[in-house]
Image (cartoon, rainbow, N blue to C red; front, side, top):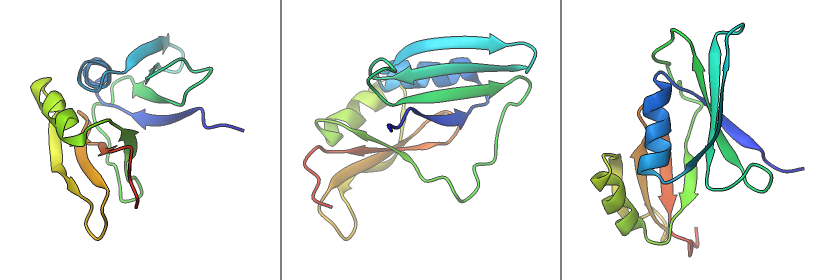
Length: 130
């Protein structure tokens, strides 16, 4: 078994694709409209789906926002340098919601950014002990 993808419902597919590709540096792997179901799926990631886990962005036609509820936490991305990643994300128009620094009650260096729909993405340094 392996993890294939995580699905997020988005309110503006083009804006979300731009965030994940232009701001976070992922690649748009595929995109397909499903007219009978009135939805579009787009898959983004850092590598092909055969060898990597990816994110499925689901746009239900005519729905421009969702309530995230209290069950969703975040997606975590490993970055070489959390401080530099936040600088780069800000420069590309991304929103940093938790500045880089040590984890509360731990030593891992982390930060959080937010996508256009408010989904949290944690940035973690590779040498995390916690």
